[in-house]
Length: 85
Image (cartoon, rainbow, N blue to C red; front, top):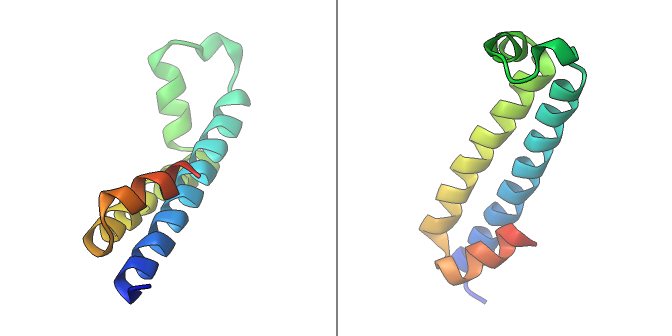
């Protein structure tokens, strides 16, 4: 197995984990928001200052970078199934 292919698959797996962790952190924080903020701009304002929601967003952004890096190292036929795993 080619080293670039292995590194690309590893980066894709890391991206998948980061995406999942980021979505979970954001969902946990949004679930704790008061119901009166649902579907209002105040919900976004409230979430933008919450550390757990910000951490979730950073996880997603780092995951996006890891996915881009994995696509530089491995073909899309390896990266996409790994992201879905």
